[in-house]
Length: 437
Image 1 (spheres, helix red, strand yellow):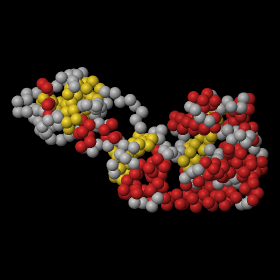
Image 2 (image 1 turned 90 degrees about the vertical axis):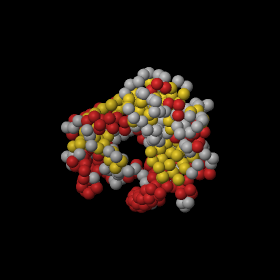
Image 3 (image 1 turned 120 degrees about the horizontal axis):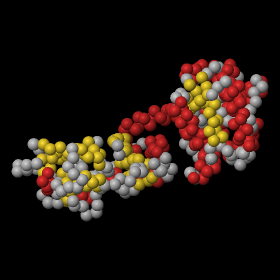
């Protein structure tokens, strides 16, 4: 196995030989063999061990074992203790998910602070098969069937081509010691149930199960590559606008495709949505209908689906107490400057008669009943009607701001000035107001 591992590194992961590596080591068979192989290859490695305090003395003994192994290898070892149960309760997660999040968050912090290039984990071919079966049993898309990626950003899994039997045989041949996690014997968790009860039956039916599974994985990954290329081409056609508020997806162009729901899934799968039938129903829904994930929402707006990030910040109004050259507002940086000339064209700035302003000025969102006197028009107009006539989407309305002097609207910011504050030939004090994005 050593030669096979060395060849795998040389051919597929050569960048590891020139990198600073952090090995996630539990003390179990897989991570011990990974550490040993990397040490034998004289890679630049350090260990990182998590004590999750879930198994009492057994967890502490694992820590002692890992520290001794690091000393034997003469390498640096980092250890962190976690209140896993407390974290799981406070974050409403399973113990397994809590441990995973704690582990990878800490590894990431270590890598950032100490400038490790990659984090190595001991996942192998049997782990990959288990993950495939878990995803299959729960229902998944093609990505869920492609298994554990060998390289995922800075996380690398060099043992992925090797089976658990190969790894254990290598450990015994080289007289390596490791720790057995007693919780791995329990069939309480789905992964363990598959490992101990289901997969042995499958291997008994077909001894070549892992080899054939690996071939299937390659075919699935190749198919996924074709889909990703197609989605990239489709995206250029159906996504008509990308701006800070989100993206616009053309409904008619989506509906013209074969299997629109499949395309919507591929376009939106990275934004945390789960209610895919509700998203598909948006294609025929009335404007204003919305579907939410924990981080994003999609709004039906006439001819488009508008995808935007949920803003967790509470946007408050801003008060500008007095005339100053620059003021920070919730809408951005507003610049005030005195000038000798004016022209009433353009939306990104306005000229106003300073004598007509009453400080403090207020930057706020629109309220029911708000109206203004649009520059260039006679009479007043409700802000709600102005937004409708301008065909502002729900998201655009939510991101629109008003500059007010008392109860009077001076400017629908970056859209339309108010006639009451315009400069005339008799104006003696001219102020130019610009919103700097």
